[in-house]
Length: 428
Image 1: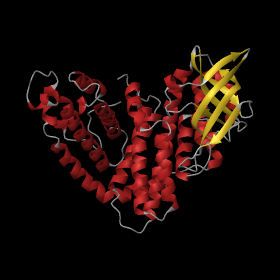
Image 2: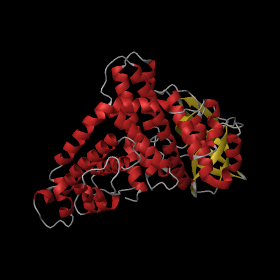
Image 3: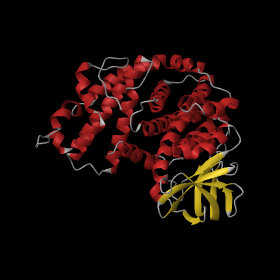
Image 4: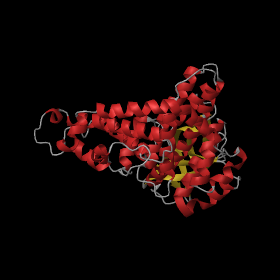
């Protein structure tokens, strides 16, 4: 993730550049390791949130006032984080090696608050114009989404953004965002199924999570037993999108070698699918019961852990695109209302989401960028959707937007796991 200091739209006082440069994973990790706070889960969550804020502020942000506000707010958050980590070492020098690097900022975070307040006042004056400008976004028709997805990042990104804006019940995320991308991550062993999905011949989904809702391969309990050239699976998968509509379910199960990916046909013996009581009617979730169910191994046995990690990263980027589209649909609803609204925070949330999503889609995306996009876009989409439901309470769209925003933020584990998942991607 970048932490450059060159002057750009949204730049802050050059006197603060040295502190800004220190807000990077290596330096902040060293600061935490120098104190007793390294294992403090609350501060680790704050560290994740801070790094996401810093990355968003350094992304491609077209509006100068928004850029200044986001950067100043990230500096204020960084100053307070450093103060929390240093603790007593901030108020008195007791030999902390890193105290001097953070002392000035941590002892006066209000300097950044003042910068943020000034910039935010400018955002309040121009937020409506900024948001109206987003209405020119081209959303491809749903009939083109499948073909677009074959272009990987660019095409899939455009399709997912349009999917989020449409608020439709398409199986795009399960079929493409999950199944197709899992096969793409699998490589040549997934080509046959992937090409059938691209042609529209096959509709698929992925069954990975179990009782905890986590996508951590260590928590997979579904068993895989060899049966000649085939396999038999037994266990329960939960929170599976589009399981009732899929022709094939790609299930993660554990053999002696570890977790692996298996293809289970929808009509396989011992397979049963039951719809769960879900809050988002546009993306129903299912329980998948496997009872000595025949399956085919995809790829190498025991490679499922690495594959799940890659698939989750790809899925988080896809969800971020959906969340950007959700925000833009919410903005459309807000702007169509009669009430005079302060839309400054909404403009900041949109710019943050687009910045992080764009970074995650980059060909040279930094480690952890997908996880950052999932955190930042989930937070932004929920806040904008909540605001929309709050001020336009008679809108069916507003209620549906909130449910979809909540669903997309929690589907892969939510805040209970995504902050630590981000730090894991950074090796922290």
